[in-house]
Image 1: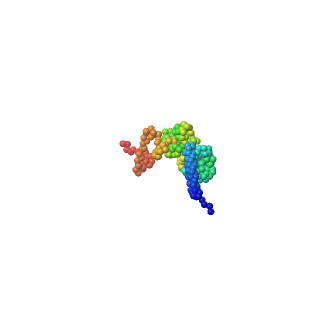
Image 2: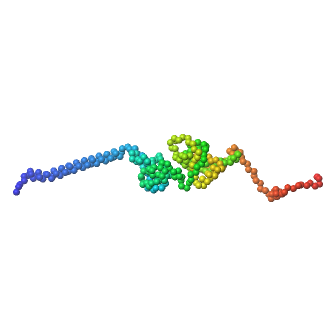
Image 3: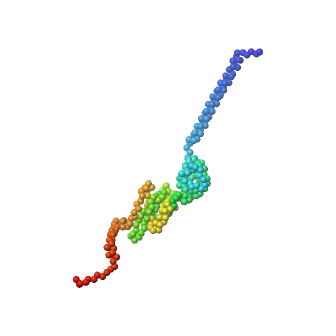
Amino acid sequence: MTLRSPVQAASRSRKPLIMFGLSLLLGGAAVFYSKHYIEASISHYRDQLEKTEPMLSVVVPNRALARGELLMQDDLVLREIPEQYVDSNSITLDKLDTALGQHLDFDIDRGAPLLWAHLEGGLTPTFSGKVEAGLRAMTVRVDEINSISGFLQPTDHVDLLLTHGSHGNESIAPLMQRLEVIATGTQTLVDKNGTSGRRSFTSITVHVTPQQAQKLILAQEIGDITATLRNPEDELPLGDIPMTVAELLGHKVEVEPTVAATPTSRRRSQAPPAIEYIIGGS
């Protein structure tokens, strides 16, 4: 039987303690460096996210749209995308007016960037898409005065006055009011930059009901139509009393009163002419 010395026994008993302590030390070091690595990674990605990057707002549908649907503003929202990832064919906010009212040529998923290639007309919208349901687009001839000196623009509202008659019997009367202008000549979009300056056009196109369209056609046949520009916030109605040349010059038009005829006067007026004879000579 081999006997161990007290030193050997003590050394053998301390060995597990040393291993346990070493394990704790290595585990602590591993936890420390792992935490440091994780925090460094989080900081790196946070810095990447906080970097200032040019963003661009593109138009995306807020629901899935099917081919053939009419593109309406209520179905669209804006989504910011890093500029470097934006397709050059994407529809942006400054071009949205051109896209509205067009029919879709493809199905589009919700949230997917809307491209010009998705639209039937592409960059050239169909004018019929701008006509609201139940209304009609009616083109009215205008001259230099009627065009408000060339400053009239789409989305403005106008009142129309009709002038008719001849040889001093002319009169002017309100015809229609608060008609929305959807085109001036061939221009269908508002010139927000004012780069076009004074423009020349010989017609304006307005939103009208079918009944108003009939009235406009007839009015153009019997007289001249003048457009007057209205403030967009002004909703006061026009008067319906026409003005004549006499009223313009301050002349009062007197109407002779009619006297009711009595039965006797009617009989006198109806009696045939007769010859009066004087007998007796005095």
